[in-house]
Image (cartoon, rainbow, N blue to C red; front, side, top):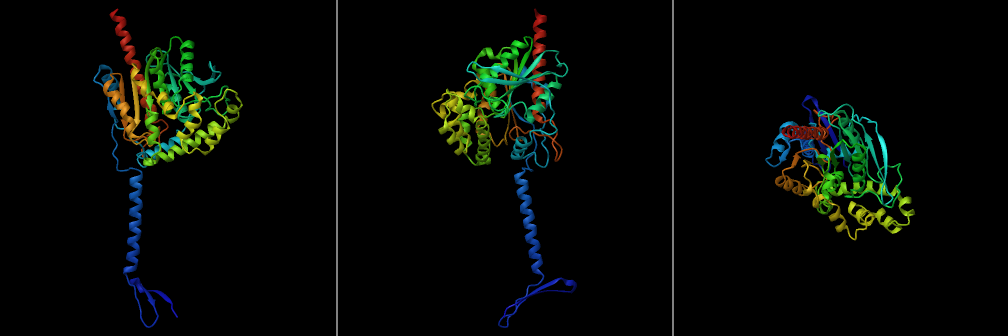
Length: 438
């Protein structure tokens, strides 16, 4: 017979385990609880180490890295935009994690989101599509006294009702800017397609139609062009496609774009920084948008999309598969490579001559650091370009806050308006100098 006995004796806390079998006895004394305590401490230390590494808590805060040419305009902008030269301080406990910043932006958008009041406009396109955008009038006068309109292009599958757009629009309105926000074709759930195509990575037709409408309707207004993520690619491509597109444009701001779709698609298949997982999640969202218009796409006789393409869509697990089976066919591209080459702003951005601010974050899990070479090289060669690279911020996050809770306005919201205010004052100053010299 075999049995185990565990006993404690008196105040000395001596634990004894006795095994009786064949006349021998094994006894474990005070070292047993000490071993248990050591295991607990090791487990706690391991968990704390993982938390510190995952949250990147040891990473120091720093001002953005600024690449620019030595010009009067650049010096003026950096002098009058203190946020570009001061530390960006994210929330202490989680703000140094690019993943948490990105996920919070994706799920929450922003905190305490306002609801700006605007008017939805519908623009018929030559190919039968119907572009829509929302127009928000300024609340109060701009500091320069000029009529200035921000023309805004959101990120992939986004529109004016997204929380980050609403927050930015409300802030810009209060600074004296009229805002026009493009709703990507097919992105609004309650607006049906009127032609067999949706928005694509670099199609500028809808954005151009919105800009033309603003120019015609407000002949005295000046424009500030703002693009977020995929929207950054579209606005930079639009401005570079034709010099006339830059008429009456004061400046352009691009936030968190990847500059080259052809290079980006290679990095998007890698597991580094969980990009393959983000790729899958973005692909699932794109599936929902496309399938919400399934009946419209199939019903139109001139559509390039049929049951075969939709069957491949169901099986897709990446944006590249969706682009190959669906998106490239909206504009008749023969291959995925051709689609990415023709739709990327990398072939047009060097033709932009107005002041251009490119914003990116080094810990953006969607944009591989190698893609930032385009922006860096551009800022090193072109006098109108400023490239600002933060250490933290994730993809479209840039939350600010003390310890845990973020502020309603992000660093990104404030720095865009601060930069555009500075450009507006510079242009006003230049106009006054020209007038006085004449």
